[in-house]
Length: 165
Figure 1 (cartoon, rainbow, N blue to C red):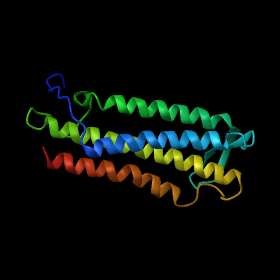
Figure 2 (cartoon, rainbow, N blue to C red):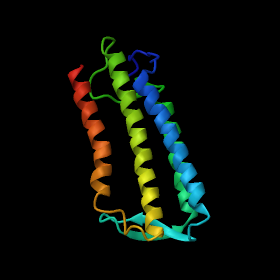
Figure 3 (cartoon, helix red, strand yellow):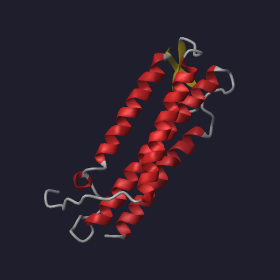
Figure 4 (tube, helix red, strand yellow):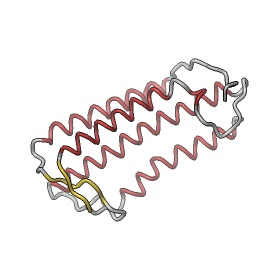
């Protein structure tokens, strides 16, 4: 790893789009939280079982705490894209493939950041829907959809990365 070249990557249109969309999504979730916070009961669902049913309850402050952690995670992952030479790779990094492998890896991180935000946004939305009686649990769709949001980009990355050794 110490012999990997350090390359300062320029953001392409897709990278910029993913970054902007990620920051906008974080802001939208914060806005949704603040718009709904005062109307929330003091006790809300804080955990859902594998079937999507609420199985743990806690203070409504948990929504703010989780969003704060999500925001820190997003910022951390954003900072991580500045150090692609420090990441683990599926293939051996050489001077010839470093730039392309770094581009693929940083794009994957940006996509996964966005997927994390989307999943937490959906969790928040479904929690609110449960509280207001518009839903019962997360729904059967939640687990397969959210799993796919992570699985497909990772599989696509592994395919592209191994193809471009």
